[in-house]
Image (cartoon, rainbow, N blue to C red):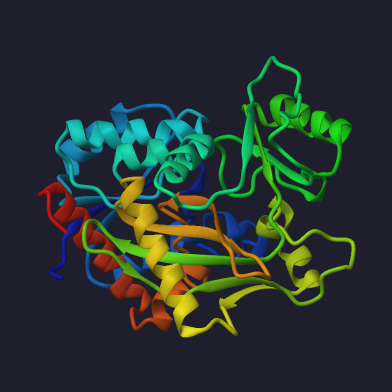
Length: 340
């Protein structure tokens, strides 16, 4: 790919400092994706400008007018503190006819709402856990169609925000308490869904119309305490010392037959097409001991950090990190032309 002008758009608090030497591993974790993308694109010879955004669309317009980038590499996950508003920023880029990387606004809208995405997938006979939504301002009452145990989450937030061991509930009172926690502490509606015992599998998907899947990845606990539920909590995602203590790792799934791997990757493609997800995504599944596959979540624009599961699975599939980023850029340019 020829060197190009590229704006890398991110939250204003995640613009990496020029000097990383004074940052701890924990501090670096929060802006690692932004650093990895900026550094890699610079090393590839592109003219790169970081753009920090919080609540002002004007800084986007002004930067695009002055810098005239070929594409915006979109790493923004929220706007004005609202995770759902990132889809509107992408819509703004489309109104400006500015090519960008990652998912289109419709795909972001469908995937962000865990209940809506599950309804659409269930309609298309994609297996999802049974669930119920508990809006803010209403007391949680479990419908008869929903059986314990359940896992309670934010309806719209990603990144394991608000998920803890206490998110898995086994009777009515803990359900009400956890729903209340999501309402009051997280500030969103809550969703409670059937807790699926089994292996947690991830599949990376790359493409707009012609989709490529990467090898199936798995979340592994090497030192999981006996009373700990097998879930990816917020503490596991963001606390490095806790991860090391439990021996948490993600790696290529072992002991899958060729047929299982093929079907899981095929299902990942079908889900992306069903939810109109473009660019790149990670699909989260649970595989039961009996071999039944459940979609947990569809994640457009997943973590692109070097060494994390999406980039690692791409490299195992023959796509090294710099090539992965350039492929994502080409997909963004193709989407702007209605191709790819």
